[in-house]
Length: 323
Image 1 (cartoon, rainbow, N blue to C red):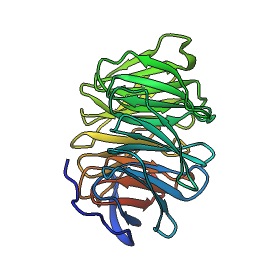
Image 2 (cartoon, rainbow, N blue to C red; image 1 turned 90 degrees about the vertical axis):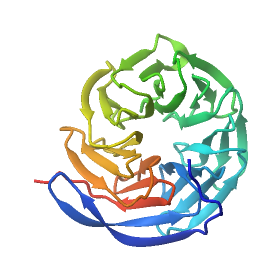
Image 3 (cartoon, rainbow, N blue to C red; image 1 turned 180 degrees about the vertical axis):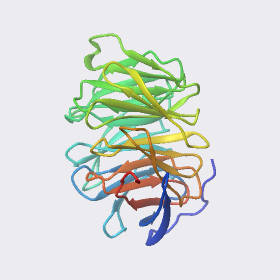
Image 4 (tube, one colour; image 1 turned 60 degrees about the horizontal axis):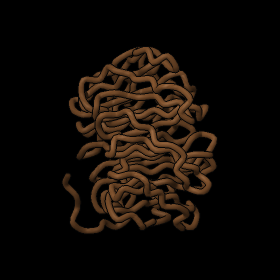
């Protein structure tokens, strides 16, 4: 993985960008955030305000004001790449997953480290809060998902079943299940507290890089190295449709908050947005010069952020199906 050799100053700029849809070209604008020395791998929007958090190959977490484009905080403490960042539901804490094998929890206002969760035996690739804020889940190269008490950091359970590394996890909106995507080409859905066997979803023909649960709870999306995103009906796990269009691996998927659209970021340097109801490709967002590793919608669904080697870009998006 290529990365910059020197730290980059925090810069921001608005500029015009062409956004292609299935049948039209429209103009919008994007805000470019620069500060990480190398890749910005994970991005996450605060659920209650305009702040954006990012994790990077430079071992840091950065918090941005998306109105001004300025960096508000630089948080350090990990000893290796920060692959994933996640806000608590109340916006008061940030959890981070790192190649150093730990999950850390931070106070989002002060940047103070609150907990270090050190139970994995391999790099931690993803982390997420349950929507009720009571627990955290993490996925690791050690092939497991671990569930932690969010208040005191205690390990509550270890979910084992994948035969290869777990790259991504996602909680159901009702906080009753957690989904995991693995390099064994499967998605697994685990009931909370281990009350029943997990549901295994098979359909991908290559390792899975990302999973995301729709905010309305009715669908689960997964994307991976087979260049497709699959939408599954939940809770039964029926495969609804396969979304195609990316030329290379899909690195990240994210649902618009109203569940009307699914966005996917890929190694082909684009973000594609599909209409949920029809599977129609609505937009292809271009502008990144390298793979898009992480994407996130703003809480109101009006903006879409993408993290890459060159920068973090934020698009103003009014996603409408072309006539």
